[in-house]
Length: 164
Image 1 (tube, one colour):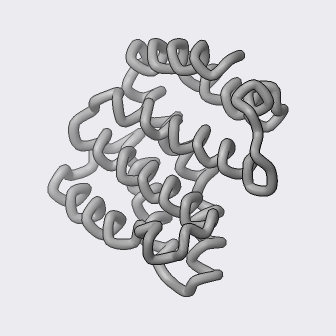
Image 2 (image 1 turned 90 degrees about the vertical axis):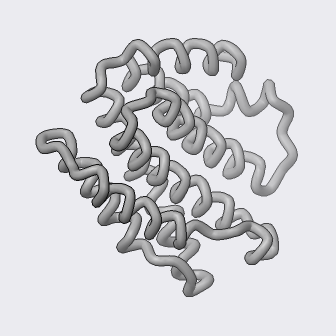
């Protein structure tokens, strides 16, 4: 599936998905990206993986019990504080991965507050962007090569399947 086709299909599906399934998708993507944040935090001794993990757990618990919006807003501020600024880390690719992991968690918390499906779409984008960065880490690939890469195909298929 080409990038443009994926974007259209994923966006359409996300906006028609039930709230609980949107939340499940958000949490699953955050879990996938979490280890990239941990690797970044260990290398640079910066950030706080526990804050992201706590936020992911709060989102997961929200599947069965509604979370207090004021509490979520407080956690959102804490997560925002531990998202790396790329300029501070010399453009290291690990920083990009950690940025995407942190943004995905922020988007998930924002989704818990306002239930806007655009957050779910952005969370999916964090995942595909991270995979794209990983594929291009050691080589400059054309969009067509990325579209055909098994890891990108698997990632896009995961997002399409989870958003049905």
